[in-house]
Amino acid sequence: MRSRKRRFTGSKRTASAGSISRSKSGSSPARRYPCFVICVDNAGNEASLDLGRVYKVIKPLANDGDYFLRVVDNEGEDYLYYAKQLVPVTLPARAKRAVELAVTSEA
Image 1 (cartoon, rainbow, N blue to C red):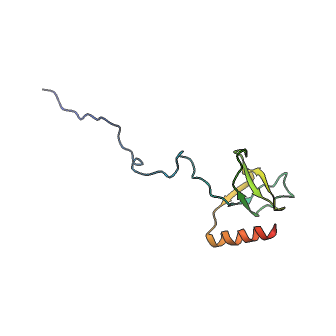
Image 2 (image 1 turned 90 degrees about the vertical axis):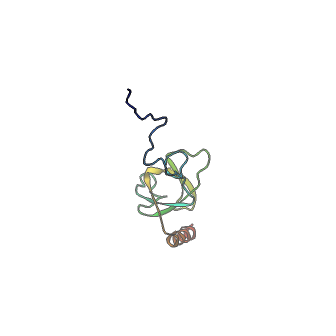
């Protein structure tokens, strides 16, 4: 007489198998624009970026590189700056409106 073993026809479900991912690529979620960043390194851009200041980031153009962010700088113009010089910040809605007004009025 043969012993009966269970036979599996599929793969074993993992703990994350039932969860639904919001991201299609599995990487970070899509960024919403405008968003805000703080300058942590202004080397080479001292006239355009101030250390510790909050800046608005706008949607990149098709040919903007992966290592750059399109930032509205001190002159009120949008230029590409290295992403490593800027740290993204998440602001509550009320703070976001206040920063948006401040950034717009300075330009």
